[in-house]
Image (cartoon, rainbow, N blue to C red; front, side, top):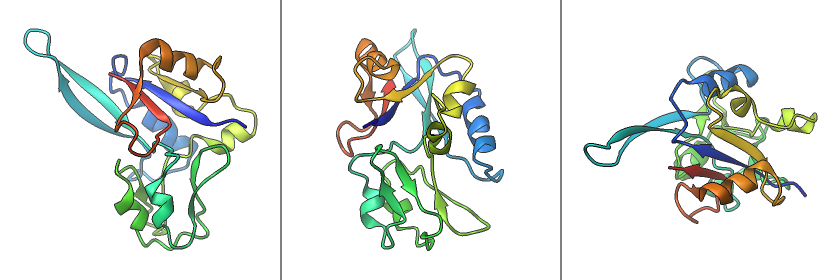
Length: 179
């Protein structure tokens, strides 16, 4: 079975927002909704200090706190490892937003339902090889693929670059970072 994951190389990210804009279009999000947010972090020391752009999105955790607190089962981890939200079952209680250690869930101001990055599940189910955010990135800072396939581009990149999850093994996240 395919278990999707992503690598984000912050040494290549220029903070251009192309991934976020593409995601908003792909998912028909309102202007005040976004599944990708950016944090800035200073790294290094003078004279080699730099500002690093860190795109944050749903980490698609194997041990997803958001799914474990959802009273209706709307938030759940699928067989492919994608953490999904069944919009028809979401009652807008916001428990998942409180439980997410990465604070990457968004509430739709019109419907009250909570949503998040879907790893472009609808796109990949139709045979698409990647996520919209990966395709839109002009610096190729993102890699998407099957974490269970050691020959996939994402698995090779994680090993080659020594990528790590942002919070260690806290939630067994499937988004890895090069920093």
